[in-house]
Amino acid sequence: MMFERILAAIGLAMCVLLLVRLLIGPRRRVRLDARLRQTWLATRRRAHTLRRWRSTRREAARVANEAIRRARGRGEWDGNVYTPKDLRKPPRDKMH
Image 1 (cartoon, rainbow, N blue to C red):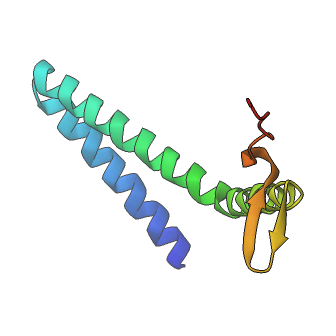
Image 2: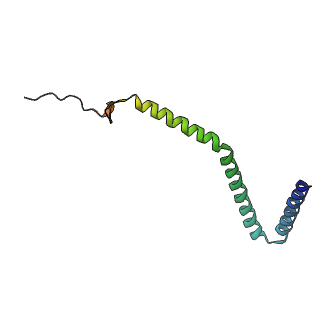
Image 3: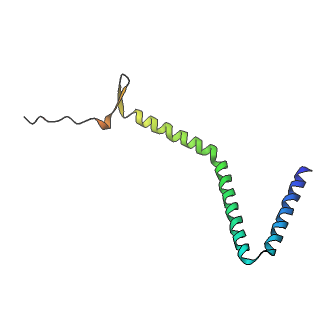
């Protein structure tokens, strides 16, 4: 019963919108069409973002864990001090 009323309300709103579109001038019609197109695209973009939210979070966590794992293998710990192998200075030759 409630679903039928919602569909009827959506149908009525669409009919009223199309009637208004017929009654306004061509310049306003172009602006209305552009605004409706923007609204539709923004709605689709938000729906797509909501659908992909969990998988995006999972992917970000996986990438972060992988970066942490790679970083752990590149240096050494001396107590609580971490020294990356990439930043060590090469031994200098004595000039004299």
